[in-house]
Amino acid sequence: MQAMRAAMLFVLLTIGTTANAELTVEDYQTALKRAGASRELVGNYLAGLGRGIWLANGLCKNCFFCPPENVVANQANFKEWLEDEIDRRAAPSDYIEILLMVKMMDVFPCPKR
Image (cartoon, rainbow, N blue to C red):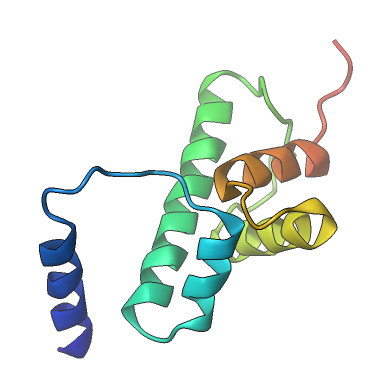
């Protein structure tokens, strides 16, 4: 019930604002430190982001990265890959969307064509 109230409050506070689909490393890390709806929302965002990148790559026949067929792409993997990339080279103002994509390209490089 409390999560529902937090979600409703979030919707009410953001109605009429411009949607921004970019999340900085700083905002991501701040949201993860919070408990409750904020942490859950950023987790859901990361899962959707990762799935979207994964599906887009599949639709263009691995034009960005080339994962083996047996790899399971899920929220835990996306979080691990993102946090590894953040630890490696990210600045607080970097966008997590780019960092996750770059990490997938590093983890699953395509053979030279």
